[in-house]
Image (cartoon, rainbow, N blue to C red; front, side, top):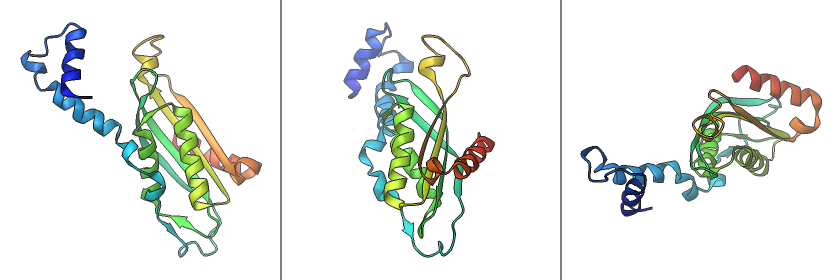
Amino acid sequence: MTEHHVRALLAHIGEDPDREGLRETPGRYVKALAEYTKGYSINPAELLKVFGDGAEGYDQMVVVRDIPVYSLCEHHLAPFFGTATLAYLPHGKVVGLSKLARVVDAYARRLQVQERLTTQVADLIHQELQPQGVGVVVRCRHLCMEARGIKASGTSTVTSALRGALKDKPEAREEFLRLAREGL
C-alpha cells in the first residue's frame, strides 16, 4: 500500500487528507502496516536455535507463558491481541526460549485467523524440535468482534493445538492445560 492509497482511503471515508492532523498519516500508516505484517518476510523455522547440550536427561515439560500476540484479522483487517502459552516435552534437544516467542510473533505478524496461528506455531515446533510433545494455547481479544458487528466487548477467544504426548497422553495433556490456565 502506498501513501497515495491511504490518502484516497481517507478521502473515501469523508476526511480531508490535507487537514493538519492527517497530513503525515499516510506515511505513518504505511510504516505501521509494514510493522504489523513483517512476519511475511521471516522464515519462522530459521528463528529456532536448537541445542543438544543442556537437554541431557531433561524430560519434563518446558512452558513459556504470556507471550504477547499482536495480529490482524484477515477477514476485517482489524487487530486481535492477547497471549500465547507454549510448551514442549524435550526429546534430547532444547530450544532457546526467546526463539519460541519470536516464532509466535513471526506468525502473528501476518494477516491471520487465530486458529491457523495456533496450529502453525505447534506444527513448526513439533517439526523442527522433534520433541515428545507440543502444546500451544492462544487467548486473544478480537476488535472485529468488540468494535463492530456484535460489539461483544471484553470477550476472548481461546484456541489450542496439541501434538505428540501432549495430545495422546492424558496426564501430559492435563498437566499442560493446567499450567496454561494458570498463566491465562
